[in-house]
Image 1: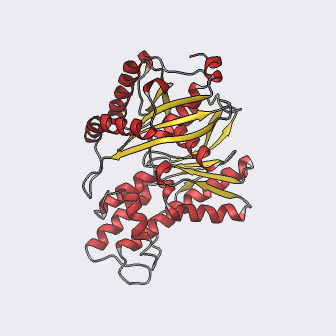
Image 2: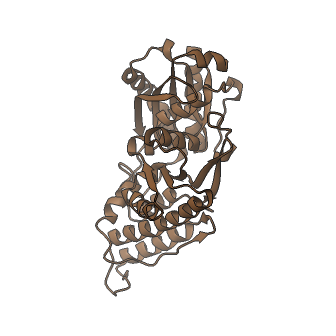
Image 3: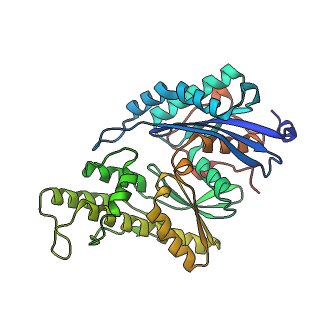
Amino acid sequence: MAVTDVARKKRRIALGCEGSANKLGIGVILHEGDPANPKSTVLSNVRHTFVSPPGTGFLPKDTAHHHRAFFVRVARQALADAGVGLDEIDCVCYTRGPGMGAPLTSVAVAARTLALLWGKPLVGVNHCVGHIEMGRAITGADHPVVLYVSGGNTQVIAYAEQRYRIFGETLDIAVGNCLDRFARALAISNDPAPGYNIEQLAKQGGRVLLDLPYAVKGMDCSFSGILTRAEELAAQMKAGGGKGPDGEPFTGADLCFSLQETVFAMLVEITERAMAHVGSNQVLIVGGVGCNERLQEMMGLMAADRGGSVYATDERFCIDNGIMIAHAGLLAYETGFSTPVEDSTCTQRFRTDEVLVKWRK
């Protein structure tokens, strides 16, 4: 559909399909009014999570099998919740990357099938841009520095000249991956999520702050050394030889507290540096780790010192979901963009700054 045809429509509706990790999400969004500044309404946002046993991670093949098994059920529920007919849907959007190869492929094939069955245009979406645009839509943040923190990504981002520019990022593993892997060391449950369960345990700790490596290098962070040291301390605790700086034994809750305080302090530091560089007084936190209330609190204290504010969403939109893919995809579609079926591939590596953000000035 040409840009002029889209612009003439007062109502535009997209279905979005997300499956880059262990969350299968399908959502339907409505845009109304001027495509350059649409009013967005969430019509449905359905999600189903693959949960692996405590002490384990989720393997690509098992996660992909989960997404294939539940896709039809979740899609039907999303359409039923939205209350729209197939003739009202303008495009089908899917996560093109980044993410885990097998789950991405499973959902891309399913989205392509829907587009062909329904005769709808297909729109491939960058997962990271989906998080950012959903966060902006929900919170109203207009020109923030974005902290994108999840199981697969850790980036500090600011918008300039139709690109989301990356100012800083992890040099090795993502902060969410660090937390998830530490949860395995303590056999913490993956239900509803290991990061959430670490957060709850950390609230019971705090008697001591254990010494962990603090690795900020310019605008970038490193989390692998912190993880290694935290795993060593967990092993010492299990063996009965773990003692804090006061000479008293520390607990798993103390370890969770110390890990959170250290990695979140690193994230606050590089975010503040980016704010100073671009002259922004807004911080938008997106991605699954962005649900963490302690991270929001620490970021809020820093922003308040600068006369700024922090924007964040709840778990409906922070954690991977289909509605963010629908929203970002529809924004792109309204500029005339679509993905030909023969090019509807997916990729594990798709950087945020590769996307031309034509819908923003």
